[in-house]
Image (cartoon, rainbow, N blue to C red; front, side):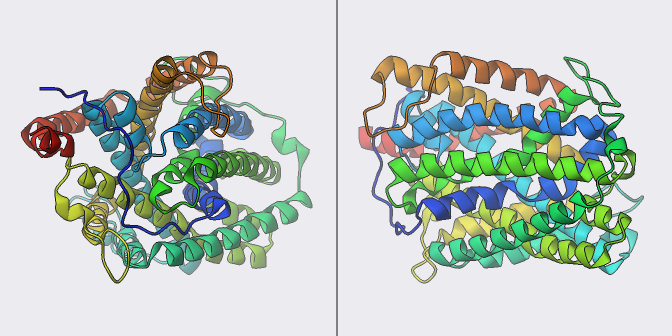
Length: 462
């Protein structure tokens, strides 16, 4: 049994190559600029780091940036379907790729659910909507049965939107990103007229934070805000539909991340300069800040745009996840039905239906706090594996060619990425680790029971 057999090369995809570099940049921004900036910044300021959260964001951005440079070289040298799953398949082999595929799927599933819950917060805040307790929270939030109904409906709507072809989904995502940026620009411009430097006087009320296991402070803030930038990897999963993927995928990854980090820092600076940090523990922090300043028209506009455009994050993640499951199915590691392409819509129809069904359950029954930590932990683990993968790629295949992206300062940069990401993962609760270990145990069992025997590499050997 060879669980480290490698997939070399890329099989021709049935999907059409229609996405250019700008489409890919906006796809990454559509995934990154969402619940993190509209919701987590306010909660992070109030509960974790105060105004110094902007330092946390820069630290998190550096950590993600190191990984983005690693992504860019992989995307240029190994433009394999499935993004990180395909990169690890080509460097470490099948079983490690299977585990990374599961970690990616966990990331995408939880992000879709988190965005749906954030959307629900803005929607209820705008309409002052009060639902019965049994329809207004995850399982366990009341003494009897309960479900978070609105996020469930949001996931259902996103699943329906995915039943458009890639070009249509891209146009829709691009429009939503532009609307989202308009709301944030209005917030920044209005906020500049109301800045109170005294709000920054207590810049780091929670201090630096503990090096290991801390829950408040600048360092734990970086660990929590790390999830704000999760989404740039959606660009790499679109390799089957990207024009000139060796050039456009690296461009999309790096450019979208740079814009997102800059935007997060500016918005946090204005947010903490206009409202005392301890008042920002709300799920609609940007709209709340404008209401606090008395600029009701801007608060209403931001709320409406947030409601409309938060869907772009769930849309980008659902699209990326369908591409991932399609890739794993094509390789035989998942049932072939998941790689069936709809002749009418040009999307993996069964993968999309499966994603919608699982995301409905997660959004309806799992609390936001668990989802956030679970999302960050699974992502950090596969980024560490990817950094090791680049070291192995360089050792076995040498430097990139002249027309390929070259990650600078190897091996120093991948080792630094491993150390920073390794430092960030020690801030998660043991129960989150236990849950992830259980899920990966299930993944391992499924691999040996089903995936190994049905793998295309195994069938080719026979």
